[in-house]
Length: 343
Image (tube, rainbow, N blue to C red; front, side, top):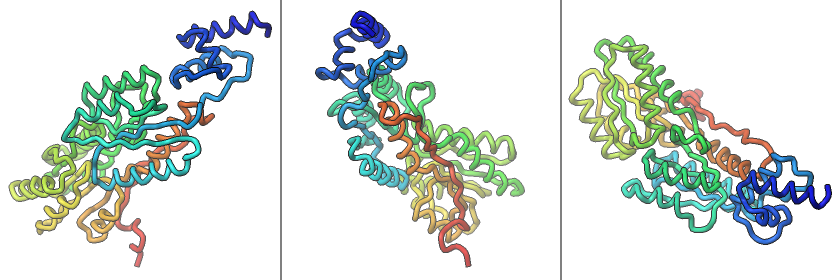
């Protein structure tokens, strides 16, 4: 390729990438600094056009990923925190993972953390509520070329972001299918449905799936709720105790979130057995399964979520040649599956 052809090829790359010819020159010839977003655009265009030259690596130095999670003491988020710490240690030669926390009592913190990184980022992993402010902040990050991973809870319609987590609608339907089998022959049975916050799409989907299957399979069974208890132990204990005392025939309970200590307090006071389905395979839930108070749990594989999220961002930055292979798995856990359960 002669000099004229080379210059024309670079001009084509500049046009496709929407940048100046000088930016293309700096990226392809490693001259001067270019933002990571523009660097990725140039290299993507060069690859698409089949530019006949050796292209530099899309990764320039250490990758910086921001992990933005809600301030939660639940076992799910403890497991996520530990899993991301392990991922950061495993890949410390390739990336820096900076963890940020937002408070649910101050929801404006979330869009601010999304919009205002402390240092330039090459990827964003976020546990997000579904609000207009959050959606707008995420759209601006995506438009700026930042790869975004939505963790645990998706946002419908935001297709440019990668969702990493289980199918929460399927999880709710699974809970409904199992619950319907337990209560189908119970005359006058009622089921209590308790959730965290319906601002999270994950809980919306679990509730929707559960209600669908209960209506399909046991339409005669009254489902009370969903009751938003925000993973709060005391609120869970008070709300569940009140409903169990006021409504005869409550035979089932599905909790889409956490706050299990409070749920346990409410159920211990009852003489009638209540089928209780919850989420997450934790040490606390293992003990409740062994004692027979908790019937089963649905686990959403936070360790798999952390690994898949990092893979998505590395792939988006050209640090992996193949798309992510890890997919978080929905698992059903009962007492018989626990270590030491066999006689």
